[in-house]
Amino acid sequence: MAEVRVAGNFGDRPLVVLTGGKPFRPPDSKYQEATDPLNDYWFHQLQPRLTALSTHGLLVIDDHAEEPTSVVQAIDEVRSAR
Image 1 (tube, helix red, strand yellow):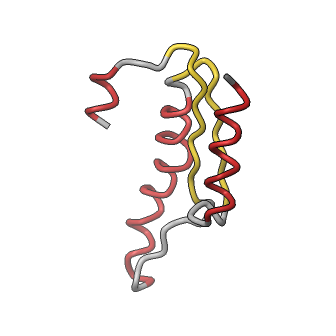
Image 2 (image 1 turned 30 degrees about the vertical axis):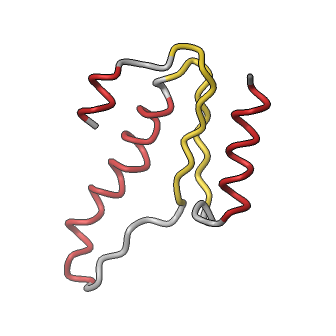
């Protein structure tokens, strides 16, 4: 995040922030209480802030974000926005 702050913003360049839709699940349920704030920060603060680095930012939350099809769709979004 520090590197992003130093870089400034992307202006009006197209940007797609592709993130998985499944919250992190700790290996043991006794850690769930500590994990909930991390998930909240990830989905409701960090990802939208990254998206806001461009006036043409788009946040895509996808349960299959790591699959090639989702990545290709995100790339196509950026390419078509040019």
